[in-house]
Length: 93
Image 1 (cartoon, rainbow, N blue to C red):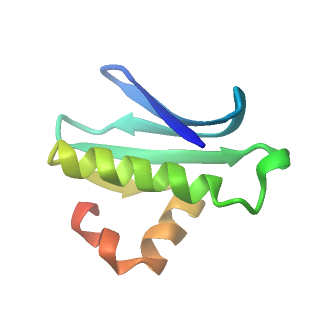
Image 2: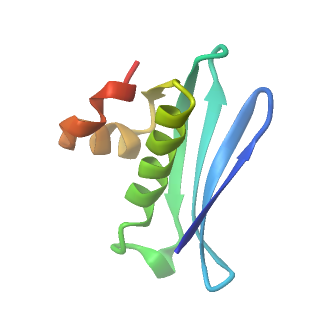
């Protein structure tokens, strides 16, 4: 599984690809220069139950750590991932 990030000045996304197929998409919006809001996560029905959503959230966490950013997870799925894993709290806003 490959996670690809696309980023613009105002928003971006993390896309999960498996053998060229889109497995999932997680979108975010910038809330200033040091924070982004995860607002939506979706996983293709063919890939449900394979941890695709969590892989995208972890890719966002990795990106935030490398760039000294904070994340506000408004998406219910992303929020649940953060609530279940205290090791991610360093990037929470």
